[in-house]
Image 1 (cartoon, rainbow, N blue to C red):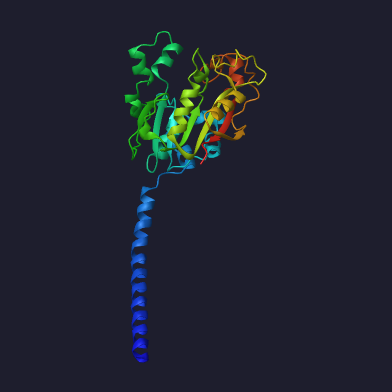
Image 2 (cartoon, rainbow, N blue to C red):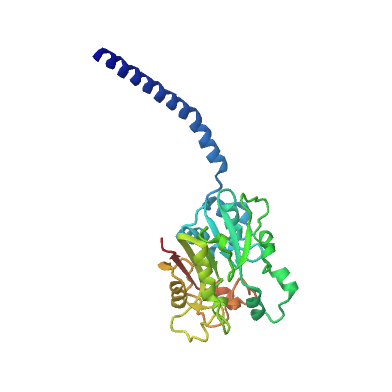
Amino acid sequence: MEDFMKVKVIMMASAMALLLVACSDDSETTAPSAMTDMRMQAGPSLEDVINDERRADNRGRDEWRHPLDTLSFFGIEPEMTIIEVLPGNGGWYTQILNPLTAAQGRLIGVTYPDALFSQMFRTWNEQSIENNGANISQMARYLSVEGVESSQPIVGYTIDNIPDSENGQADAALFFRAMHHLFRFDEPLIDTALSEIYDALSPGGVVGVVQHRAPEDADPAFASGNNGYVKQSDVIAAFERAGFTFEEASEINSNPNDPADGFVWRLPPTRTDNPETSAIGESDRMTIRFRKPS
């Protein structure tokens, strides 16, 4: 009986050895193929996108907008699902975010509701909607970049009505000079908007804000958003009310030459025909990172 058990153990050990060899051989033959597929599916890095010739016409403003440092500060990666707030028509940052996320990630455009645009512009009408991109059905066109094909459909929503199907789907939400109008008018949209963004983000999701900055001692009427400038403390307070955690502020996009004492649109890139304001450069801007708690 003892000899029989020894033989049985030897046979089982031999079988296990053969199985391990087979598994090893299989992994050796399939691993390179899997790695090749991963390399084929991987898109360009953030640095590659920013240095691409496609951005030749936009690169002149990198001096003021520091896209590599800014997006790195926000922790943006190619595989993320990213919400861009108020992207505009072929927006400056869209030209980076679309190619960056095309292969592995997803891009969502979020704009203001028509009711807010109609308060901003007295002549707002159906043609304005068509031209401005507030018509969310056209968001894919507004977020498109020539020569780039996205692996996921590009969709658009208004910031006061992001559907429940998007809850918890986004990794990041980016506000590039898009906060000031949310603070304006008799019924500020800011709390509703940030609540919708909060719901759309996954736990641990990041929010990045770059915004024209008013001095902290500025008159509240001046820093209401009507001039384009808002106080950094007011932005932080609004996000904290919505449940976000303030993580860090950076001076990446600061400009100490901007006195922030008039309409922000007196400065480049809106106006470039005044030597005095052109010498100031683009506006002084806060750069802030928030996080949805995990």
